[in-house]
Image (cartoon, rainbow, N blue to C red; front, side):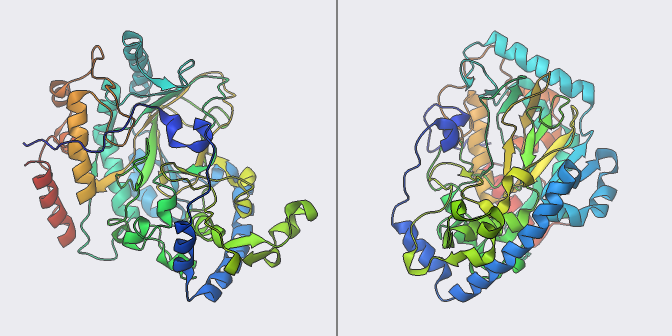
Length: 477
């Protein structure tokens, strides 16, 4: 097995560096090149874009009411023991919502014990970085023993594989992707009651301005249908367009360069709504279309001059045309995409950001990589709200190259390539080594970590077989 050298080493930092709102920095105006980009995206079909915007606003108004009325009940819940049947039964809702809770993926007692083990690891290593430094809620830990065991757990790997194969598809059978899970080493959260510091508002990971850039998501034409004025034809679940997309053009701290089909976390605690938990906007297609079209429209009259309903009416919004600016609301190069009620009023985020339902240790929560999500502004519960961040990632060339660099980071005890740099856990007492991983993890887990040769599935497409072979070559097998 050959080694893969790490590139683009990042400075030290923490999760707050990923978002302008958490870092306390000011959001500077975007360069004029973004004005030229916006003109290019809609040039020649401005009329269709205007018509599609009006259709979108009407649809959003209806869907917002459903979400606000249903609240957490709108989010599909599946049972691990009935996973295949539940995926068939709930498929339409899953595709529409882009969010799911999978119950009982790991045993409850085992998963709860992870938190205690992590706290002991931190106690042994007081130099562990966290946010905020004076009252840690999110830890810059990637290689603790519980994180390794959770990522490689056979049940979790099965859920990841099944979710990818049931909900995602390829419009081109030769697309270089395999729906076999590979591991992505992310942080963890142990949020304490009363915390207000980790108050991350509505946002989307996976870049920001890249969603509009031709050399970003445009490389795969991910959102072409939206920019062409036919958002109804946009397919959020087509993996073929995502493979060539570049989602990190600015090497931001915490900006994800790996293709994560779903973001996710494994709960280590029992957590109710308002207790420091996740909130989502469960309308994946509509919210994506609105985010991307919003920079091309403006209100005719300000909200202060009329009632809210009149302000939001389609008649009060116009295509900016010749007065277009470089603005992409909430998008800052090198940071995550942020949203709010002022910049994105038609999403009605104060009502449509709904909590995930009550979660227990061992439950796995996933959301589509374009889902708007947030965390409670205040943790109003009486006990910790603790999770291991574990996304769902397929095999692609870019993911395989990242996996090789991440494997080196694990061996060295440093953060993964996407994350703030420094020595990380290199000097941590009782940091697990490769021997620990091999003693606890089966062959599927070792493959997901890049320590064993990937094995193609007999039902794989031509593209999947080809990328498996290439990935093995990249990883040195």
